Image 1 (cartoon, rainbow, N blue to C red):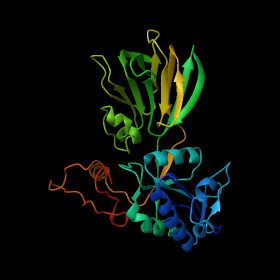
Image 2: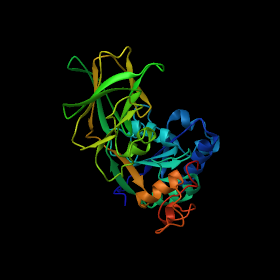
Image 3: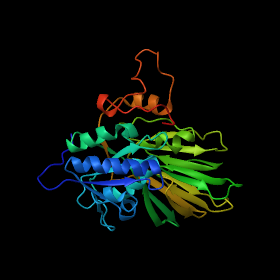
Image 4: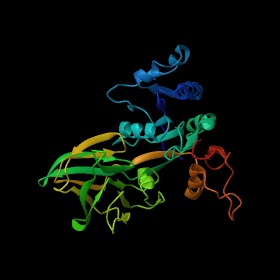
Length: 323
């Protein structure tokens, strides 16, 4: 149950994938529902300007320099990419995100488009819980000195910058050398990110309750280049070796990029700043995997709920990975 309370007017920030007509329609429906429930709706000025004028009058522009000022919750309309953009907005605050999936798999989302009325109802009654997910602090070092710092929810990926050439890297765990190899890149991920890029690179799926860091090589040329799962207190390091013929690039959540020159080292540790996700229900993570990836679990012992489940009956279950 949300612990938001008090007598001050309640406010919800709505963020959407402004380029999608479906997101525009959903934003208008959500705004009408929240306002009917007595909740003040705020939106970034550029997104608010895209709404129908009649709906636009029901909401207010958020402060450009502090979008979440006064908001108890951020509702995100879009796919995982839109939710990761919203994570930048709430970074360092205690404001949770509630994602409504308008994309494809949508692992970070809590609800689907057809659940929008239920989402409004739950928010109005404060019937949602908040769970914390670990994030990463990412630092680039050169000649022993930190030269850049960023962060990630899903993963930090050190990749080759030139398509036709691999990078040569060495991997350390807790300051101790482990191995070296040539590769297309290395994914350094959280459990939340284990179903994203790390999964595509052959890494394991890690249940969200497990606190750990993952290291997954991408197309490595080595006998020992298996995915690693280490303690959440560990430090993972990837150094670009001098024999690499060009620079590498560091991507965080596919959104923030930094150039990593030769002899530079990327260090990843658990961040003290988690991301908070609002949950309408807590179905088993196994059921979420089956639903999101369309796994053939139906008819097996312990059959999971059918594909038409909703937030109201124990968890949102889409029609497979393209829902």
